[in-house]
Length: 100
Image (cartoon, rainbow, N blue to C red; front, side):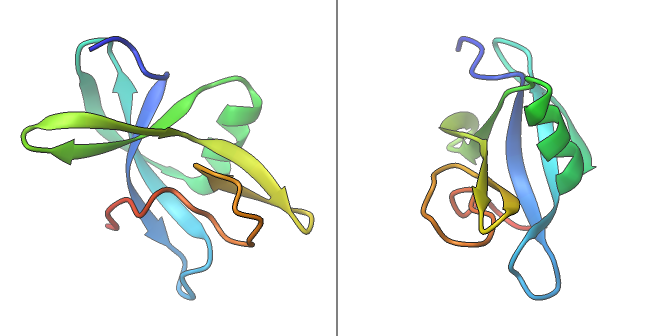
């Protein structure tokens, strides 16, 4: 495995109305493996992306990490969302990652 990004996002937690991601669980990409889980607020991830930190979604499948999609900040109607693709809709979208 080669380094996919600075961090992988492996799980998400949504707000009470399930419209925005509230928190994420990330793991540092260590080239051949991923580090321990860290939990962060969505706002911290938005700030990090703006500062040049890269993120990719990751999924644990058959005993190994699988690479998903790069994570970006997408602005819709003046609000910044974290998304793996720009679908033009309000709300965060990270490829149906598992929730915690």
